[in-house]
Length: 206
Image 1: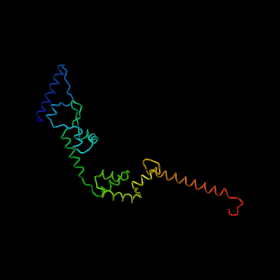
Image 2: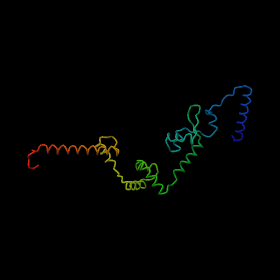
Image 3: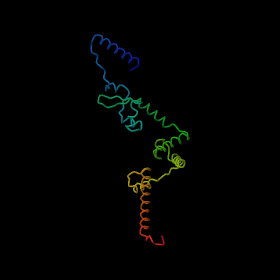
Image 4: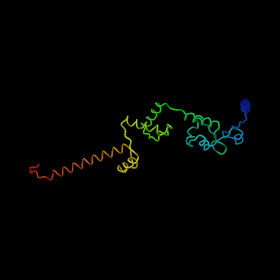
C-alpha cells in the first residue's frame, strides 16, 4: 500500500473517531496484536530463532538488540515477530563493524586493557577477532612489561591440588605459600628449641 494512501486512511479514521466522540458514541480501540492476514500481506516477519541464525548470534544476543535496532511485535499466538528489513539492516551493521581493521597501536591498547582486566589469550582472541599469532606476542610483551608470569595450565592444576582448592587464584596461591612458610618456621623453631633444651646446662660445649 502506498504511503500516501495509508496516511489518508489514518487521517479519515482519526476524523471518524473525533466525530463519534462528539456524538457520545464509544470508539473501539485498535489492538497492538498483529493481524495474521496483515502479516502475510506485509514484509515477512521472522521468529527470534530465525533472527539468531541470520545474524550468527545467540538468542540472548537477539534480545540484547531488541528495543534498539530490533522492534519485535507479538502476533495473535503470542509469538514475537521481527521485521525482516530491520534484521537485514542489523546484519549489515554487524558485518561492517566486524570488518573494521584496528591499527597496530589500537589493537595493542585494546589487548593490554583486556589482559589487565584478567582476560586470557583465548578471551582476547575472541573479543578482538584476531589470530593467536597476533595475540600471543602481545601477551608476552604485556607480561614482560608488568613483571607478570605465565603459568601453564597443567602446573596450575597441580598447584590447585596442593592448595586443596577446586580453582586456583593468585590470592589463594599466596595464602597457601604464607601458611606453609609459617608452619616451616614454627617447626624449625620447635626442633632447635627441643635440641637446646636437652643439653646439660653445665656442658662446656654450650
